[in-house]
Length: 425
Image (cartoon, rainbow, N blue to C red):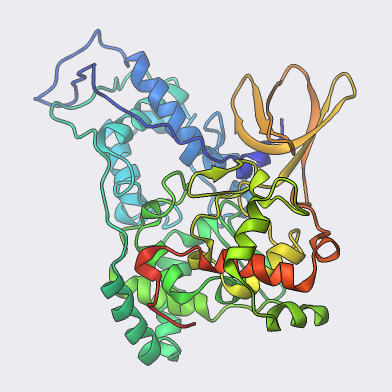
């Protein structure tokens, strides 16, 4: 089975709770529980591993995840028992908690201590030991371990106003851009998940969005807020909280804001020049008898389908030109986690949909009608990721210029409260 499709996994984050069972272990303040790794701890660790780790380290921990080939340093082989035996449980915990740079290893290993709870990190340690078949280091939760995830607030309107003042004064300076580039490429784990185009070649990971055109697709305020705490805006995101200081987020934003531009089609100008009506656009968006019926696939504030991305605050997270491109040419940029998968069964039946989850037993997808389908791996002959979007590409033919402008105006109106009125950009 091709592990590349793990780039499409979305919405698999389990809410991990250690409420009814008390585990202990490790050190003087521990209690030995049958001298073996508790099964439930390994099970919880596996769920976290699949969501956050398998794309680099591989399903079996062999260092062969789909993203591994894009990294300048090979991921650790967590299935290597000899290598594992040289590390204590606390050493493994520290690497996950502080990231590679925090233990003088590769900066490509992200920090997870600001994303996962202490209990969840110990669950990952237990599962990693299980991958290596290492029985010499039984894993138990230390007494008093915290099972609550770190909580970080979204940025406030005042924070954004302060950032905008800084960005206006310093954002385009060479020193700011160079400082951000150094952080992106050499200090933080950005290159482990995101790609950039350099000298007509794509370099970097394939887990998150391609940031080669970041400056044209995302506003600086959104980039800054997302870097500060992605989980405040998308709870299920694979991106960990990198625990960056505001000064670091500022220069990272300066670097990304200077990247790329969207190639506008010559016949896009009428759509950009037209003044849209958000109320009319909303009616078109939700009309089941209309020409497009966007809400069949997309949801806003909990209303709509689950096939495509949630658009509840897309007016904050995407630029106007990016939104228009997404309407008129949806295949140009496919949101991470929403690429189409084509499955060929052993009965010669083709099945197409968006992959939502995969485990050892099979894959779960959502088809174009919004139906959840499960396909057992015993039924699959082969499958591949398609370079097309599930979203129809003929809206330019179906809709009048004014109708497109109305939908665009509605999407632009979908903003988070703290971003409203902060910037006129």
